[in-house]
Image (cartoon, rainbow, N blue to C red):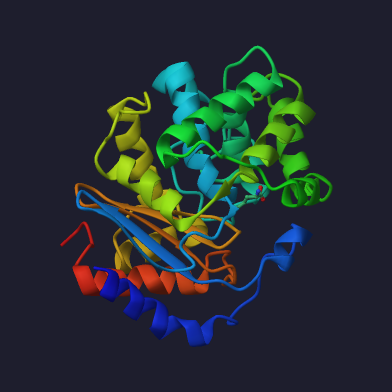
Length: 299
Ligand SMILES: NC(=O)CC[C@H](N)C(=O)O
């Protein structure tokens, strides 16, 4: 297995400077060029390249936010407030949210939806809410040194006009309860949690095997996997599902989390993105792994 992963890294390393790093969070421009891949199967974890390098969770953390929101509030409450449909728009789009007939964000994996699920995390204080997400990360990643990237967090917080606009619109529509700035802060903090490809592979493995060891109901894990397939790659989700057929969730830091039900979890990282915000080499590596191992869930 390691030989296959090494081969994929060696094939792609020459293109490591292809594409652009995200710049709307200025600090993400300073992330070094890296290339990592990790998979976790029932036989163990296999890695190649910079699989241990830590980068920020970004949109992949929407999976964790949804886990906690569902566990805390149940299916009906969560999905009365946020939909289950792909939006077909970019992840931070605001336009559809203000159509008269739109009463909730399309899904929990676009920013509007995730800001809302972050607001559903229970706790008597900001710190308690954040600790609950940190504890879940600790359990899933099987390590106790969970950290946050302060530079990326402040950089996002200080440049978040669009997310702020989304959150205030959600408040105005009566969907968002609580203090808007505090909810946004929690959302930015969770996005800045640091993960590696091996961490993503562990999370993917938990999803792939409906593993309830960290207290998340397997029915919720099934829902999350389904949403990853239909909405996880922003407005590239449909094409990614047709071409690769693996439930995945991507983030602007350049990481992608994938899960092949019953087989494995996958984590890849490379910070340069295509025009839709997906890691160019990340997508390519998953595509090549799929060709090597036949992972498409539809064949
Ligand atoms: N696509 C992403 O990874 C987006 C996450 C980022 N923190 C944002 O809200 O814009």
